[in-house]
Length: 199
Image 1 (cartoon, rainbow, N blue to C red):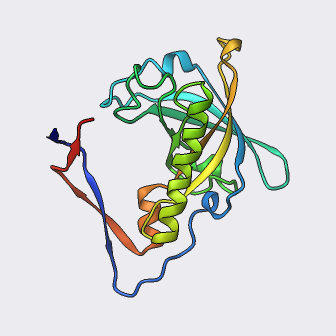
Image 2: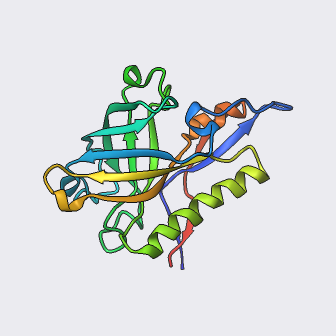
Image 3: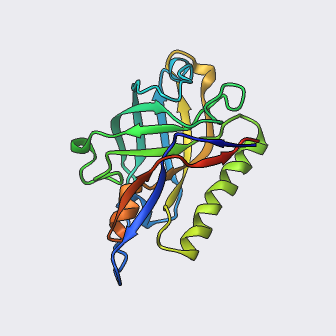
């Protein structure tokens, strides 16, 4: 059954004969980012309201090009629709909000916020799903510059309140919509009243 939806559809208005510029620093390489994310995930993962704008403090640590560990104070928001349901994923997709002053000169320099796709569940099948979804971004990149870049990550999840929570799984970062538009010298247009198939 097709249902009318309220979410916007993203369109790109591209200038004639425009040339794509380089992507943001994070998306110029394909080497997986080794990182850890520390937060009170029990509280974060309880937020399953698709309209919620609540933000939760977290610490993101990763290694820079010289091998030094860099720590950033970030905030997390849960996001999504189907995968936001507790019945679908125990680990929902996240939006990571950065402090631009802290990110200067780092891999995440210039980023305000980015989507982080997670492993959904602990089973091996869900690990493979991450790789398949990540690969689909690469296919679109080959077909057209008007497509979002992605960067694979190996994420260690840490919750100080629950040592048993610790797990390392793949995930990936998705380029910001405006970053993709900037590369293509275009702009984002928001269109309402899209349609989606209810499975």
